[in-house]
Image (cartoon, rainbow, N blue to C red; front, side):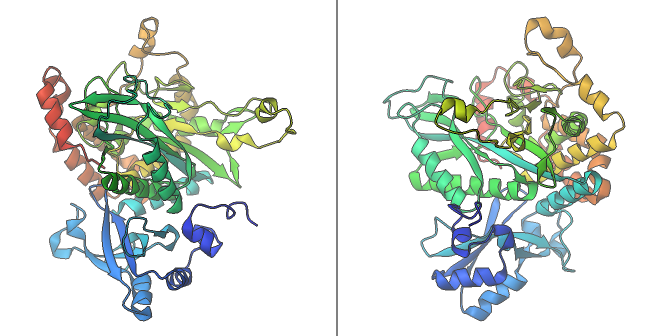
Length: 500
């Protein structure tokens, strides 16, 4: 049996005994018939970054075939700000590879993510999902490689404090129960996400924990495995939807907001990337970071200021991206260095077989560990439009291969010290800084927009819409304005508590 099918958590993969990428309409009909499914849901991301839902009851087989084949018509002007009400009709058509059994529906329901099409039956150019598709295609056309990604999804769980086994403030990293209160909730989320097709690496409690006004706030993280960037975005969208729905059942509150109070850990959405060709990871060469990886990093160094327009999309984002904390503010990269913007995580490049050393009864495994090497962009947070963010990162990595001086830029921006230590002040001064507000991010996107619009990846209408939204916050001086205003900060956090 195929190792990827055996013990697969995806309910449909297990039943159909084929990878999700091979699902067909006939497979959907067969699963619905043989599992007594009563309803079908279409879900699709709108301009606010959340999944929207359209419910169908299965009237009969002919109707089921019609909705799976033709999709349905929706009001685009209610979903996206860039679509005019006078010509707002769009089609949503399901992508069968995203199908999953809804774990929250009282009636057995099959749910699928959808793509948007315009009145002529062509993919909607400004749809976030299609923008990511175009970005990945352009990356492959230029480099000959496949762009893969995965996310580290951080969030806070909030519930009444039981005062038993109190956690140590801001020391929750990988804490076990009973000091970590929501491990069971997180593992149940992971089960549902995996059943829906999410390729999860692991989950754990994170640094952030505190109590406030009788409520406990505990930070958690679910990290995914690298896969095609378009699938990575789909999986993150479904994961956020699952976490919120299960929290609702538990009467917990959940936030993916980048910052919820001063002096406590904010939540990021770190994105790991790798470049694949012929089934091989091209991030390493002879056990060290490859020229390929360094070119991609150089592209991210150049476009980092405008990537914030996709990955840090509301004013609270820039209360997380402040100097001298773990979230990055300086445009640089380094190995295993958490003070930089792009980190090269510890890989498995050692020549020892650690499994055999830990377990003397095991024989040498000869496992190909090069597949594990990624590079990590640390600036994005939970306010991100997932499809736009991954598209922007694909553009940035592609741009690295189009720059003649990419390796020179990579060398110039490499940092192998903690740039926040006093003795490294001169090195810090030499580095460019990330934007400090939505307004500044909009300005940088305007300056660099031509790179994102190249190959028709980001449509001009989409870039215009992003810039307009960012500027509408009028937050150029907001960090300074709220520095000694806790009540103002509280109101700001409340306004963007359920972002993304």
